[in-house]
Length: 373
Image (tube, rainbow, N blue to C red; front, side, top):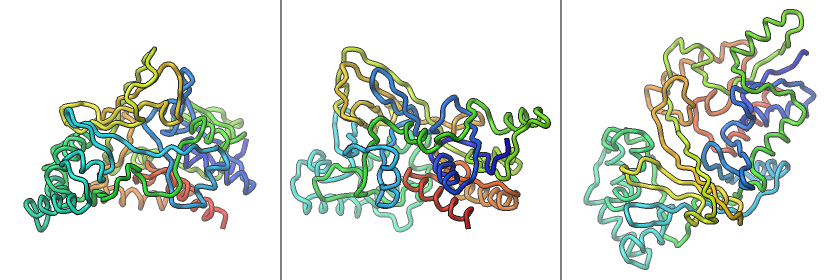
């Protein structure tokens, strides 16, 4: 077959691109190294519960166009992300709001909370913070930092806050209202029936080959000789440094490890979809109870413990580390990518950038528009 595009990666970016290109009269072939489509938003049904296999994904956006777009492919419920944080034997609401401060200090009014935070900030204030600890103390004071920021951040990055550059925390949202809604976006929820259905509908009848890497595909395709598939362009959503065989060096990432557990005879393990554990001594950062994303009433439950991990070549990369060293290296890879004939680079790995789902859709639609000029 002859295709207009080979899409490497069947996550949200590739799926939106394939859908829109088909509407524009183009043909696509998609491949993925995993055994399933959907990338990190893949959800798998187990015991009637949709399990987010690669961590919690809550859709939220302020872009009504994007909201209307995703609602073409699934009906969304009214789930609101309101995580709870556990520090030792204490329980706090997230994000930092009046419920958090009332529990922490036994106060009631915004004025009291503002006064305590202002006092603690002034006691630890540093004109030019050199690390995350100094930056966080400047922003929220010692109590919030030590109980809710320090251990969690150190687990995420695998380093002490005094060793992490200050820019990692640009701001820490503090709200002086009794509002546990983590996101301020007007549109948010979870698709009824999970995310995988959205990916399947976006790809439609686009042919997909799973469990094969880009290099394996090229090798196998070339071996077909006259019967090989051809394509005019490639959309590559994998790691940009891997595409170039790491010729300039390796970009750095943080990885994750997920530990899934089915608990029979327990219909409600923790009472909330997301519970964060902010002590560094607790090895996981959070526990997800999947049924609560869709208000499930199943007699059993499934939980996932999420462990941050150091990334090494061959591991699954989740978060780019956008420090000065990596941003400089990515800029060099971007120069190579811009000179690569008929290859587009998209998504968080191809563009070495953390994307929320709505921003993935926006970026994919922008790329489609540029291609169809």
